Image (cartoon, rainbow, N blue to C red; front, side, top):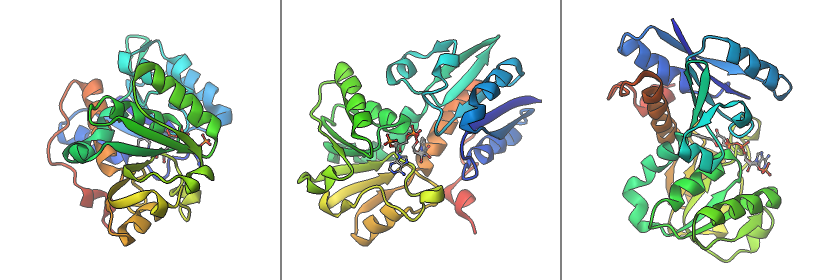
Length: 275
Ligand code: NDP
């Protein structure tokens, strides 16, 4: 049986095994996808063990999308530019790294892009980086501001983006954003604030930065509605959670690993959120 999996910490919330194992079963592929929850202290040891194992491929999630790069033998060009990966395929004894988050992230925005020119990205980690890259590749988007708990990380992200793209963009820390007078067409939460131990928290107060037609997109998919999204719904704003992105990035990973298209219509939103 071929082995696939997911490395990260924590992983309790992850829907990835459901998505991949459903397709393996449907297509009669003799393979299984499982979670490998790895603490920071055991990260290097676990990666070296995986290198010796017969695993065919795996996904990488919080907080290792950047940290894993030194262990990768070859990076697909886009992943190299972004500096973060979420998918690894074993080819012979070599690990090839890809970033399928960029593709997944845009899926729920495709029909709205014409209405979006200014964006506020909350967070400056792997997902924040991927969000900025994905959006700046779209001609419609020319203003991206970034707010992050640590301003230094936001500044570093902004500098690396400005080497690749021409765009307008300010950076703020969580306190400074309150004084900001800009209103954004799209606000994306790319932090983990709103899930796990942080489920009762919201990364920012959106009231001062949203206009009537602002779309609020939270990359978190579990819970289905974070506090940020609940607040946006109360203000009658359009909201998107992270499920479509999760499914989109997973489909691309599946194609990279198996060379087969992910089967149509075998999963739907109800499949994940049924009580
Ligand atoms: P990283 O660890 O790379 O980055 C985490 C970000 O969250 C940083 O900006 C960090 O700020 C911020 N942060 C963490 N804890 C706090 C806190 N207590 N208060 C304020 N800010 C905080 O993680 P990723 O970027 O890889 O992932 C972030 C989120 O995106 C996760 O929730 C993940 O589930 C989601 N995601 C969803 C996907 C999907 O398919 N739907 C795909 C990818 C990610 P600082 O720089 O100050 O540390």
